[in-house]
Amino acid sequence: MSLTRNQVEGIAHLARLEITEAQMPVYVDSLSRIIDFVEQLAAADTAGVEPMAHPLADQVQRLRPDAVTEIDQRDKFQHNAPSVAAGLYLVPKVIE
Amino acid sequence: MHTLTVSELAAGLRARQFSSLELTQHFLGRIERLGPELNAFVTVTYERALADARAADAKLARGEGGPLTGVPVAHKDIFCTDGIRTTCSSKMLSNFVAPYDATVVRNWHDAGTVLLGKTNMDEFAMGSSNETSFFGPVKNPWDHARVPGGSSGGSAAAVAACLAPAASGTDTGGSIRQPAALTNLTGVKPTYGRVSRYGMIAFASSLDQAGVLTRSAEDAALLLTAMSGFDPRDSTSVDRPVPDYAAELGQPLKGLRIGLIKEFFGDGLDPAVEKCVRAAIELLQREGAEVRELSLPSLPLSVPTYYVVAPAECSSNLSRFDGVRFGHRCEQPKDLLDLYRRSRGEGFGAEVKRRIMTGTYVLSAGYYDAYYLKAQKCRALIAQDFARAFEDVDVVLSPTAPTAAFELGAKTSDPIAMYLNDIYSIAANLAGLPGLSIPCGFVAEGGKELPVGLQLVGPHFGESRLLSVAHQYQLRTEWHRRVAPGYA
Image 1: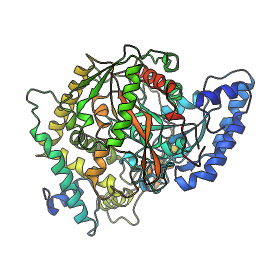
Image 2: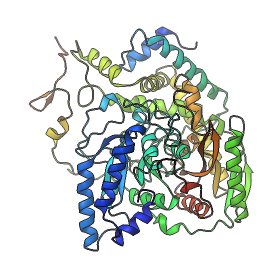
Image 3: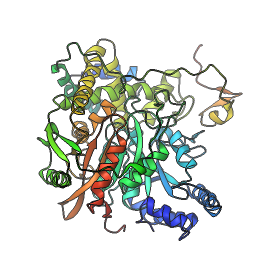
Image 4: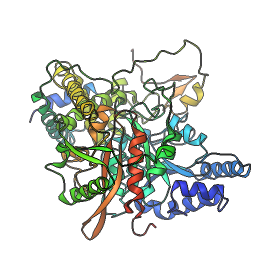
């Protein structure tokens, strides 16, 4: 087992995912197998190889003119929000 | 009408043999009758379809419209559709009504197509069997006990069962090509950047690309032309003219240089599948193509590379689902952290959570260099292998998947076995290359005939050549014309 339960709990916390007590052993097992599986990359000779972040090597991020192009659609966008009031998104109290 | 290809339907519409409304009602009737047994659709857009069809008929009556005007299509439920529920087959988005259209949706709409509905898929496109959907698995029309492939499994089943003449899909590691192979369709994943990703719910942004599932290469050419093009709303969209792919299908097979990837004809490949692919190679050779074997030694790194890069990007992309602005929110959160953790824990299914956690781990402090950076270097090796190959050949050919469709539930408990399904398709995504799958035969399993697909991969922006090879092959074979028993 390459990952411990403690480690998986730490990952779940970083990812902000609640994992139930019953599911935890399943994730410890399957994540360990996945990490073991990708471990084989360590054997590849990548000396002097530049990491590739984008599939088209000669592409550069475009810049657009700094102009207003969007219209205000707040009500439409907030239609999907679980809880809003007066155009604001509502969450549980953050500061006591 | 339902077994006609898109080009045949378009000709019938222009000749006024049938109206778009008649055609649309015919497909809606089939979806209503046959859709539930396959679970191919998440949402059927009856009213929208009829409105689109009436608009198309009005255009056709005025002598206007293009080659797709009035042709019904379906969209994978990963594409945002303005005013229509867009779920990504996740509980997280099960009530999400998109506030805008994806560019792919807009482009096909502008071409005059009729929207029949939104198709089922693996949750957030993470899966190879369409079994991770919150709305349940999709069945393969060729054998209901088997998977249609994934993640575009609903689109594949819908087109294979003639519930729609064509459907959109997305392909991050094989999600168009593998289901196309498993359901006897033509499936095309274009070059990264060819089709806009705007409004396509992101999984792994450096790999995701939209494409089509159809019953012929000619249909794929028509629909890909309409789908493609530069989009200022996608920062990775490539500003480069779109060829009329349908007009370029006549390129000859004679003199075509085909490379066979040695690494993709080895262990793990079902001999019955290999036999079909070898027969197709012989046919292409007889028609004047030159075939040579190539070794791309870094390709065996594809699957482990992908399962670092894709989950890393997924963990970042899916952090937007926070239970605050849209998507599922848990009941009675006691504080903000509890809201995040439970909304995400409840809203995502098991495979999505597994990938988010894999990605979180490989990006975390102390592991980034060993996993993520290393995988990006391996990705460069894979891309270099292909670049070298395309100095000598025009296309590379392999099976699309190592086996025909497998049984529902066969691989759900073993993520690695499931991941290895995409062993031949993933490399094209890592290198950003165009690829397609076409039907090339059948194998008999459990008393059923199951389709087999072959994959062609070309250099960047080589879609035109790939489609022409596929079309020329289809002019000489009948495999792609076969429809699953009970659906013809």
